[in-house]
Length: 104
Picture 1: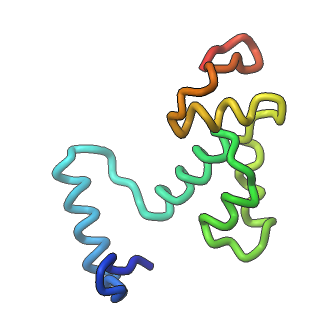
Picture 2: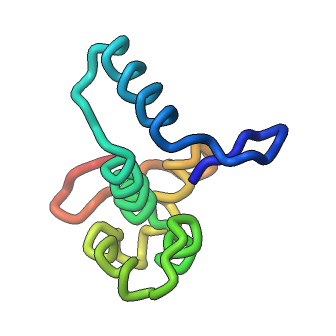
């Protein structure tokens, strides 16, 4: 559900979906659904080191078990903060080395 930022009225879902599909067509990118965008957001936030509790709240999951699907994307606890800083562009932390010798 999306609301107009000024009026607070709920956007009509079919019109919003059509505008989204039209924008994808104009951009010439592969089609993606709103659900896929939500899942991509959750995955990227987990990979960036965001706490699963925060991801649960952002995605509106009532049950934490629903959010656990993203747990296997989370970095280990030793460098999660560095990934989060990098993901949000703070520049205050260097790029950590990931397991297996892969850098950022």
